[in-house]
Amino acid sequence: MFFRAARRLVPKKRGLGIRGIHNRETLGQPELSSFLVPTAHSKGKMTPYTNYHAQRSYPMPDEPFCTELSAEQRALKEKEKGSWTQLSHAEKVALYRLQFHETFAEMNRRSNEWKTVMGGVFFFCGFTALLIWWQRVYVFPEKPITLTDEWKAKQLQRILDMKGNPVQGLASRWDYEKKEWKK
Image 1 (tube, one colour):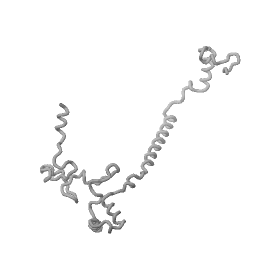
Image 2 (cartoon, rainbow, N blue to C red):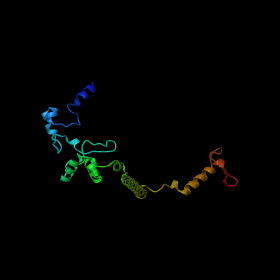
Image 3 (cartoon, rainbow, N blue to C red):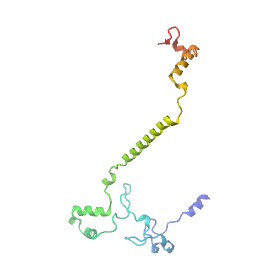
C-alpha cells in the first residue's frame, strides 16, 4: 500500500526524457516554461545539463567544453569540416581543446591532494598531543601515593611477609632463607 502511494508521487517520463532538450513544443506543457533557461546553443535547455562534465568513467560529455567561440575558433571549426589532412598538428590540438577540457593522461595524472590530507592528519594529531599534555599538566590531579615506587616495594614486602599464595603466587618464587628471588 505504501509503495503504491510512493510510486504515484514520482513523476512519469514524457517526451524525450531527462537528457533531451526540454522546451514547450516537445513537452506540450506550457506550465514548465518557468523552469526553462535559454542558453547559447538552444533555447529552452534546462540548467542542470548545460554544464560541461567529463571524468574517467564518463569521458564523452554531452556538450563541448567551449560553447562560446571566438572568431579564430569559428574559422577553425569551419576548416574542420574540410579534409583533416590539411590541418596542422596544432590546429588538431586546438580543435580537441574546444571539444574536451582534458586528455586521458591529464585526467589520470596524480593529484597532490594526499599532501593536504596528510598535513591535516598531522595537524590534528599534533593538536591532540598538545591537548593531552595540557590536561596532564593542568587538569589531572597528582598521582596517588599508592602508585609510587616506595609504596609498591612496601606492598610487595608485606605480601611476602604474609606468605600470600605460597603454592603458585609470589611467595612460591621467593627464597625466604636467602632473601632473594628464586632462579
